[in-house]
Image (cartoon, helix red, strand yellow):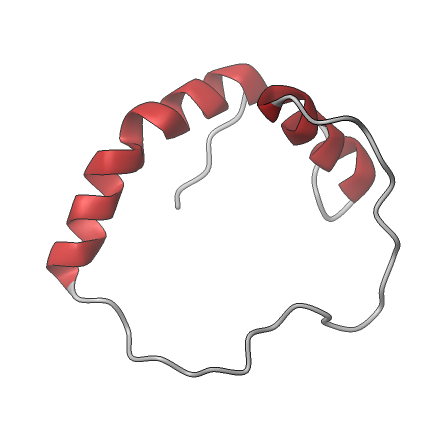
Length: 72
């Protein structure tokens, strides 16, 4: 598995394959292009816990396919 910051196209194509999308190359940008300018307060602990519980089985399946886990 490639690291996103070393080879983002290869990394992203593994994700596209997982979700059933076709492959395509992502253009390289030196600056941030997708930063949301809207500033919001941090989420509360209950919301974080509920989201983690909800996404846990989906994340496990994704991590199994990718052969690598993330701590999000």
